[in-house]
Image (cartoon, one colour):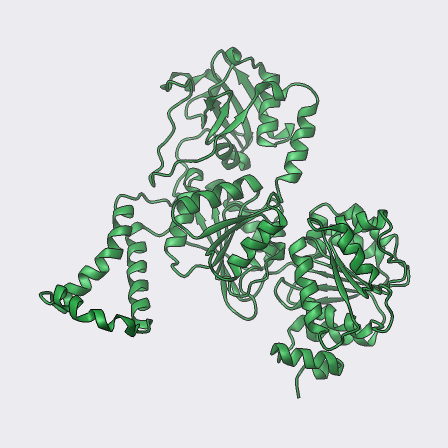
Length: 587
């Protein structure tokens, strides 16, 4: 007897379950399915991503729908297009033996009129993203006034993406006596608020502990100097030859930049973010699922639709702004009972954030060192040896063996092995033979004031049209920081000083790493002398008016140059532009 039968599921779904090869329900399925089948109730289910939540609500929903009626009876809201399509495809697989049941996906980036036609033909279940759903409601293209069931999937992520108002508006068109099923990986205050507002005495199911990550994921962190972050990423990739990973960046700009740099350095990589068209995103995901891409660089929002069970590593190139988001990131690996590793690359000023994440996920991180060049060469050699040992012999080369043997007949077995492995070894050895240690041991230099802030030198001043107020506005917009995070702005003729909270040190250095204003490089450094006395003013200038930056040990050169017109900081529109960019750049 299939263990799913014991949950009370009908014959059609059991047949589909058998077709898909499912044998044992996951914990969230065992807890949720019997309740949702037997009771008309609201439910809040908290479970880590990748634990089978779609089946946990999908099976009962299919069972409860009147297949003979063409009206829409179930609505599932999900945060992204990818997840919307994923849920739709899974529901179609679950209901494959119920031909009269139709599920339709509604999402942006596709023809709204075509989606409306599909609904008009009869869709008992609609799976939708909030924005497109609200648009169709406003156009009267869809009727959800008679639904009996509403599922909020990945509720925490929908709210984190700013869909609270859309969800409010959508739910206002639904019956008050419907059942609402809320599924989420974490339970921040916003999710709790929506549960209290729209649900009546919901049953709560928790798999593990609230906000915890998968038990199959180990957590590691690596401390590097801010400007060595990309070099550290490459070493982590080289030290794990079989890596199949998702790399998370905070913004679309960083995501694109890191992906382009990886591709330029010879890695099988691609970017996934909101600026890509739906067709581009589909092609990237297809290549990733087929393992043509080993390293997928993504924003948090775009990654919500990634449903790949074999991801070996999640690499946090930057920690997320919201600590709870880390749970979603790490959930991309360790799926379907397999183990995975979540790595975090941090600067020394960010180490304290690791403790905050540990409290949220209730797991400890292991501090590890970035591998040395010698260690990477050793790993790659043994990996090659294992590949050779496992390789199947291609007998099509048999006809060439006499000629090959003739060329190599004067070499011993040991010499042949050395020559063969030298081909691969030399490539890594030549690259890494002079590589520096990337592990940050001490934060040398830098002035930390008594108020916990860091003081910086910047090579712009009065001659560039700045006074202290204009420079502060300029820094606020470029760094996307509030006024409270900037202090002690001191403008001289050709250079200036300013302070930020110490926690923003890494961000400041990264933003100004390759920053240009009207064609001129703007250089920002931590003030090593007494900044208040102008101690940084004696540094050597380059021909462009800036200061000579440190050359990267790996020879990497940034491809893009960011430009800024100082006039943009004038007027009241600067903060509005900053806010718009801040919202859009997370996709």
